[in-house]
Image (cartoon, rainbow, N blue to C red; front, side, top):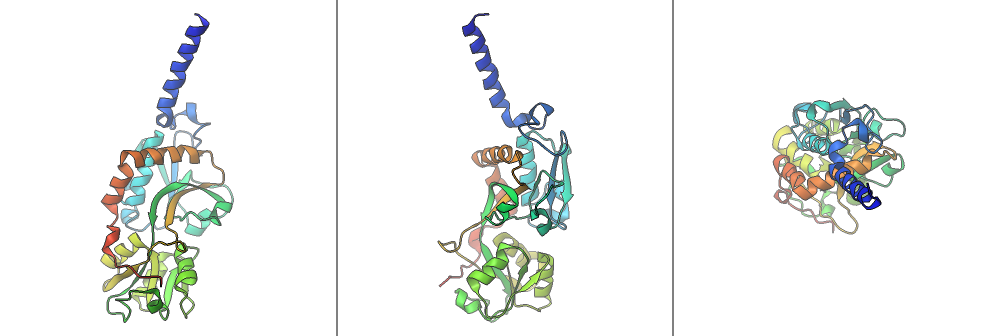
Length: 280
């Protein structure tokens, strides 16, 4: 074989390997490029419990709910069949702590923040949203149109979240907000009328008002601005995990094909269906 022929053959082989790329990530041959904690398996974590509309019926293995569907779509792009996806559960704060993880990636509406990036790694965003207030429809501020009208409320939020940061740094209420271990605690306090309102991401706000707490409503969503950035949700990994690049390529393919937008349309409410509360 001539030198020219050998180079031509090598070019064909390399081109074929690149084209296969992600489709081979679930195979042993690519384990060094797309490493997983268990050979031929993709271990994905979510919350305990996992709430709708992110996971339907606390059963991520069903693939129903926005994040469950995203997880399986990413797995498929990486070359893993549904049967080779393993689900585990973690607490929200637990997964952010430094140290070895029992999952390849975790998704439970983790906002990408610089503080969290000190201990874990994130994928590119798979969803962007903003904050919203949920309260009772008969509340005196149910028709509030600006943040100054919310300052006297007793707010609640889950600990360690951007929602709690938003209450403290943007709304700045006169009453110190009540902090709960999870959204379930915040919702229970609102339903018992121990607090006046909770702040959550907009899709969660829609679900709470439509399904979970009778008589409640989305009082409003907050606009994005130079001072208030979008909440970008990312898949969470152990710090400097090599799998991040593979997953980012998978997410890029899902965005380009329109599959990610299709999943969003299936499981999440239209963002325009909530009034806007001015930050002035």
